[in-house]
Image (cartoon, rainbow, N blue to C red; front, side, top):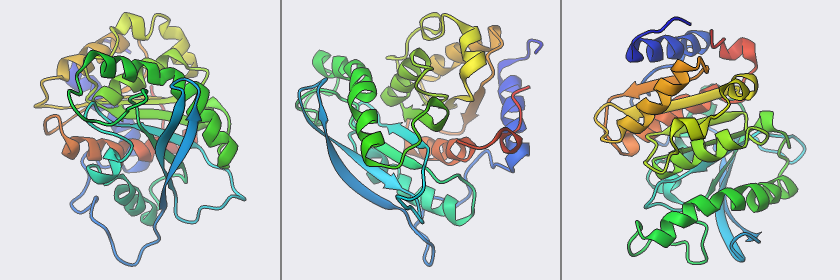
Length: 286
C-alpha cells in the first residue's frame, strides 16, 4: 500500500471493515442502555488459582445469550485500566449491556468474555497510589498470570475453543498497553488484538513487533484506537505509524473524545463486531 496521510489511511482501512459489515463508526444513541424484552447474557464472578501470584484471584465472566455447555465458544479477554479491577468494564463500561444489545441485533458472534484483574499481585485492589512501582510492575506480571493460570482455568472450566484463532485480547489505557505488549509478543496464543487509548506502558513499536512479517502472517485483526482529545494519542499514533511503515494490516480508529469510558464503550461496540468472523464477513485488509 502506498504511503497515505495518517488519518486518511486509518479511515480507509476502517471503511473496508465497515463496508463489509455495515458497521457504524460511532455507536448509536442508546447502545449502552438496557433494553426491555431481549435475551441477556450472564455475568459470573469466578476465582482461579494463580501460581504466578501465589494466591486465588478473581475474574468476571460474561457468557452470551443462549449459552450452552454443549456448544464451543471463542474467548475475548478484556482488560481494564490503571484504576480499575475485574468489575470496571461492567460498572463503568456497561460491557454486558453493550454486548446484550449487539446480540439482540445479531451483530456479533457468540463469545465468552473474560474480564480479569490485570494487577497481578496478592493485594490487587485499586486502592492507595495506583501508580506505585509495585502496582505498575504487577501489570507487567499479569502476562504470566494470563498465559499460565487464567487461560488454562477458562479452558478447563468453560467450553472454550482452545486455539489462537479463537482467542482475542483487548483493553483500555493500561489494559490497552498490556494487550498490545502481551498479544503481539504471544502470537501463538492470540490472533485478535486491540488497544483502546493505550497508555505509556505500551512498548516502543520496535519492541512490540520486531518481526513485522510474523504479524502479517498470523494476526487476523490488529486494532489501534484513541479519542482525538486524548493526551495519550501519541502512543497510538507512534504504533500506527510503525505498522504503516512496515505495511502491517491494522485498523487505526480515531474518534471524538478524551481518555474515558465514552470512548472505550464505543471501541468495544465496534471492535466486538469484528471478532471471530469468517473472512468473507470481515472483509479484507487490502
